[in-house]
Picture 1 (tube, rainbow, N blue to C red):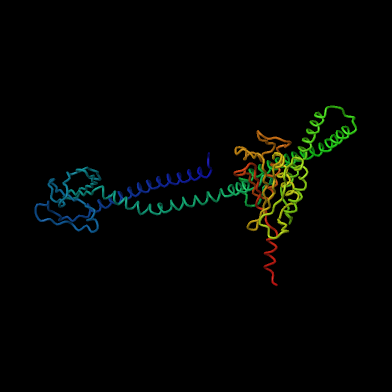
Picture 2 (tube, rainbow, N blue to C red):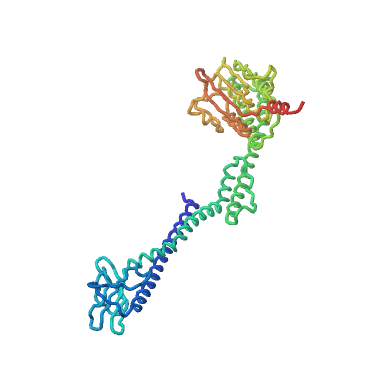
Length: 457
């Protein structure tokens, strides 16, 4: 995957490094040329300034001329008289043959020498110097010139890193803003002064896409709600007509046929009710929480499902664990209708999947300022491979039986998501059945008690 950050940093750092290498080579080459010109001038100056009485070839007494600071540069001096005889040569230095006047570069052994010769009135003077001296001076000058560049390069690379990170920060902020949004948040992104001009077309395109998604989502929800609403009334009327015709004898047929018709009508009505509930939950992305009694909601849900439990011969009950008092209301901050639907669907689902003679318990729990509940049944449970999929819409397991539509647990998951609750399913250990746990409800009575304790008496 191509990264703009890596691409920018790679090319910028490579470009600066390449430019620095070229600059270093140019500086060294310039320093070398200038050092060569300087030493050539010095050689010429030495040759023209030698005293006329300088003599000696190293066999007898030898007096070197006073050259000042140039003595460290290993200058070799040779002088010939008019007859071509060598009358002076520097001590402990290689002997050069007489070269033509001017500058020359010669090789002696493993060393290269720079020589300058000049013909004077009654003699010929030739001076030479190792080329390595020039190279050392050029390197010394180059290092003195290059050290600011060596310091500037890391500072420039650090500056490039900071500038690139700062320049790409709006893209990172845009990505985080989109990543932290919920699935129902389709509001357009804000175009303020912090959005760069280059990113503005991208933000505008995203806003247009979000607007179209919002329109499509609203149309889908409206369609589901309208369809469920329109289907519920004729289906209810059809069921009433079937019941009336069965009672007055105007509808003739086998009893089993009428039961199948009524069973299918009941299933369609249940499906329409679930679709309508799901559409309502999808249309409420924001939950307004108020103090409610979870115990009262649980009692009402158990009461509503008690008839179905009696028909299936199932023991349905409500238990309270860790209650603060006998009439603990388990007050929490929640949306009342949503919690009623959530708990009612869990109880209804447990009853439908529990065989006759089984048991379904609703257990209210309290722990560390939070309230939750569990719905425990003695049914067949859910295979471990299907536990992660049971919250999908219209999903029913391979061994599912009954009148379920595959939407009950999807509605439960949607309500739990709106309330930011933790929802988990697991099979009972050592016993048949399923245990659904809902946690994360904030205990309201704990907040009020803490606030009351903080007030002065």
